[in-house]
Length: 338
Image 1: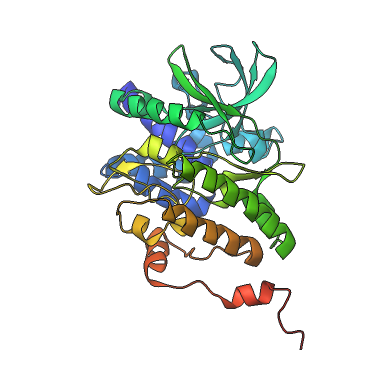
Image 2: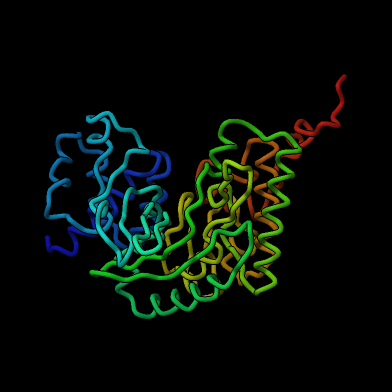
């Protein structure tokens, strides 16, 4: 097995390991599209005993997205939040990478220290497959310049694109707090709390739309709630920047792109896609409005409007079904008390 194939297997293994078990099959189906042997290699590692996985932790795999295994974290008393990467401690220009705070198909996100300005930032380190494609990289940098022009209190700010020692990262405002998805996981929000957050998200969407920018992947995981209660929309427009005009994303988790359609852009997360996204058609700002409705529904009911057990069933529900509206009535403060 050559070194490049080895790195590819390792990167996918660790990316899949970072996801809940029920999401791994869908993730690998998309990430390995057209390469069944690759999918089987990675699934074999995921299903292997812990002792058989130890070789993946060796120094030969010192690539950007090689992370410590779940077994290793548990052995030293760490949980999912304790995930470390071999990038921890490295420098990216003036930025010192401190800890990995998120993972997805568009890159791992690190808390980093800006040693020049003395501030903490978030850096999304781009995957090697992305940075090795000159066309995608040039398109991404064009989109990043447009996104950096967004200036709104409810949109996470993009500072710059940084490159150093073969790594390239998107430097962003570090938002403290939990995601809206994390908040919903503890139970539905009361109507007043939901509307307060919804107004801020709507303001962010409107401001971006006025500049011709569509989010394309609005969901609770892309909305942070600060300790002060402010909503901050993350990754505005990055679905297009990473995917380009011919990409499709069918993952149920963070965005992973693959070339499967020749018409328009389908990039996002199935449960929050608009029908035109699910059909692979061109999208406009209305697709964000649809996703906003899905997010509001989920805030007040505690349930995703269209989520089903599989990606295929979820997309079918988006195109053909209605949400369970009775859940909204149950959440309403005006429902009958009889």
